[in-house]
Image (cartoon, rainbow, N blue to C red; front, side, top):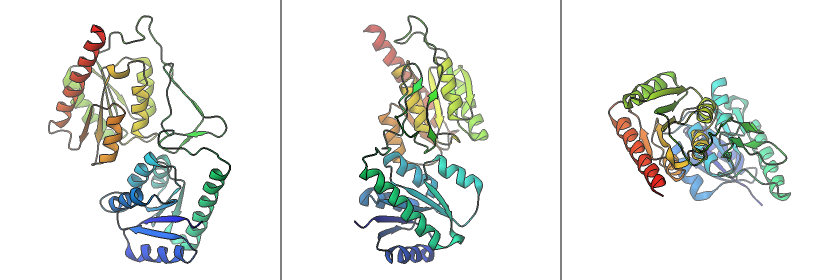
Length: 313
């Protein structure tokens, strides 16, 4: 069976050359000239593998990889004309299966395409379960332990291989279904300037603000404290923001805690998935013009109403 290959590359010369090389090997190929077009083609066509340039206008290849990984387990190969270790690290964190430099030539990229397609075919043949979009969100139990499938390590939404994430989540007697929450806001973002800006806005609530520079730090705070609000940015160096949202939604507080997602750029699909997972508000930059203040008040108001309904019941 012939495999379908998606190429997302803004350079027409590279895009056309790679398409010719792949079609000469018998692959069916579709192309896109930027990230947004690439996402549309991916959703309409559902290829067997995606090749993504990292640096593109409108939407970077890493952002495209993140969206693809949220929806599918198809192999993703990133390629770039610049050898940047930060790009490699971030691509792998977002779920990329491989990274190839353009100056190695098309032959190396064709070799990697064949390798990943063979591995995927072998997994399907032996019935090895792929990591679907839902599976990539590690399901946190009330005790704070993330389950891992038997056998090979489980991948979370970032694509990082992990076996088990253990989080200490002490439950106070009599508060299992939601006791008094702390006047605390957790702010999670890996860019220092953004973290400081969001924390300053959160401090306007009069609540204590706990800063977390990584997703792991925010989850650890969740395990030890009982906040009224979580503000999580899409830029986290160690995990996808929705992994943190999943941990928060499965926390013993449940719907009692407000969650606001702070996005640096518009991503309707990410916003849709976040709302499905219980995020009350999604805010895009700039945050300093009052949008974040309104979102915080709205999230706190909606969760206050939920707590009142729970108390009345």
